[in-house]
Image (cartoon, rainbow, N blue to C red; front, side, top):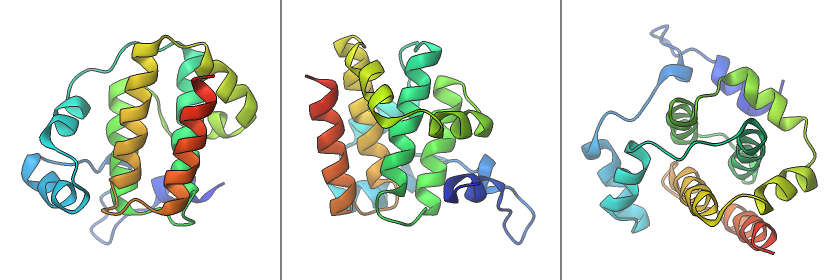
Length: 154
C-alpha cells in the first residue's frame, strides 16, 4: 500500500479517521489562501459540483492528483483533506485510488488529452487546489503540473 493509501487508513488519537476529514468553511481556507495568493473563487469552485466525468476520466484524474500529492515526497493533512473533498465531488473511494495507481502515466495522459476543454479546466483547478492544500506549492509539484498541463493540451 502506498503512502497515500496508508494516510487514508490512519486514525488520529481521538479515533476519528483522517479519511473523513474535510475543510469546514471559508475561515479555515483563509489562511491557505492568504499564504498562497489564491482567491475566494477557487474555494467556491471546490464547493460547487464538478462536471460529470466518465470512469476512465476519473481514473486518469485520480492518477495525476495522486502523482501531484506524492511529488514532494510527503503526504500532508491538507492534501488528505483536499482528496477527501474531491472524493465526494466526483464520487470515488479509497479503493479507486489504488486502481488509479495501477494505470500507466502515459495511458492517464492519453485519456486526459481526449477530455473536452471544460473538463481540462476543472482538472487544472483541482490540481492547483491539491498542490496548495498543504499551504505551500512545492517546486516538484509545480513542475509535474506544468508537464501534465502541457501533455494533456497537445
